[in-house]
Structure formats: structure tokens, C-alpha cells
Amino acid sequence: MSISREVKVTCPHCEAVTPFTIWLSVNTEQNPELKESIRNQSLFRFECPYCGEKTSVDYGMLYHDPESKQILHYAISQENADEVYGMLTDPKKSASLSSVLEKGYLIRIVRSKNQLLEKLAIFDSNYDDRIIELYKYHLEKAFQAEHPDKSNISILFFNGEEDTPMLQIFSENETQGFVPLDNSAYYDLLQRHGKEMKDMCKDDPIVDQKWVSTFLSPAYFGKPEIHNNTEIQIN
Image (cartoon, rainbow, N blue to C red; front, top):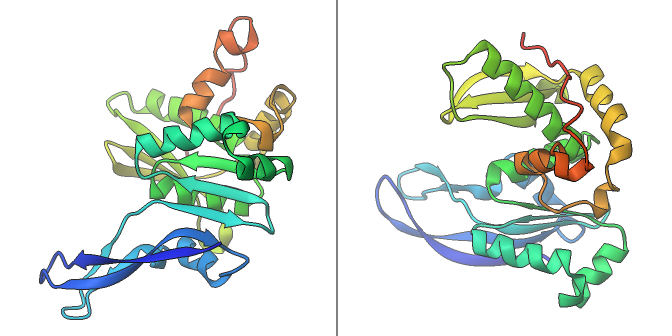
């Protein structure tokens, strides 16, 4: 079910203290209007009633979409992420989670609002988030080869104008550019890696670049590292 709570927010401009509603749990069947509020980030947006200053309020939540059978847990702390991960990897610790897993739910744990929005965009577009992470891995390698002076590269998937799948490239948290997703490269990765992967709903609940490192490691396959020859173009 959806659970909300009122907290006090101090305006960063005029320092007035105002009540603000945060959502600890969102069930899109009970509150379908919140689906778009999360995606356009208005659910995290605070506007001071005194001076009109707008600011973002970051908080963790559980996103539950019964229709799509998706559960995304945004863990605001590593401790919370570890706790949820432990329950998901050992369903005996939670009867309710065991029941959800038996129903074939897709469950993911994320550690930031950007990751939450990214997962929603990926699943809204009917992509496999594991293939997207592999795509980002190869895109980062291509970008690093062209820009050896750049460091701390990160990439986010999002849906641009007319729902065009896009990737935003960052270096040191500063935007370096935008690249449209090459569907032919995506499906090439899917064709070559899909058979090696578990069912999406049975895979690890944390799918990120660390997951990619594990997936591509010799230990995962029991043989030398393979499948690193995909070329992603930077236009």
C-alpha cells in the first residue's frame, strides 16, 4: 500500500519551515497519479509558500507497480540497501517477500534518485536493464578512448523528446554530452549475452556497473573474459 508522512522542510532561501509530504511507499494501483509525479520528479519538488523558492527533497521509497509486477526499492543508506538485499537473497527471512518472488516480480535496489528514474525509464521502454548496463560499459570505454583526459565517467539512460532512448555522459558529475541509444547495438548485445543470463526476475536485485564487472569476469564464466568486442559509436 501507499504510505506517506509529513516532514518539516526548511527553505534554503528564506529559511521558513514548512510541512512537506514524502512518500515512503507508492503503490501505483492505489495511487496511479503518482506514477507520473515520480517520473517528472514533482513528488520530490518542494516550493516554499512564502518566497516561492523551489528545491528538491531527496528521500528513499518503495515503488510498487502491481500491473507491471515491478518493485523498485530506493535505499537512502547503504545499511538499508544491505538489509533489503539480505532479505531478497534469502526469502525465508520475509514471508511477504517470498510471496512476491513466487509471483514473478521484477525487483531492483537502487541507491539514488537518478538510478530510480533510470530504472523506470528503462522498464517503461521495455528494455532489459542488464543489457543497458552492458551497453553503458562499452559506451564508457569508447568515450574514454576518445577523451583520455576525462575521469570518473558515469552514464545515465533516459527517455528524451518523443520518448527517444538517450544516454547522458558525465565526467566528474558534469555533463559531457548526449548519445541516442543504438538499438542495433542493444539487440546485438542481447543476442550475444541473453542466453548466458538468468531470467530478469531471478537475477541479482542490484544491477549496475559492479554487476557488469561480475558478469564479464572470468570467475562468472569459469573461463577467460569474453564478449568485450562490441563497438558503440560516439557521434
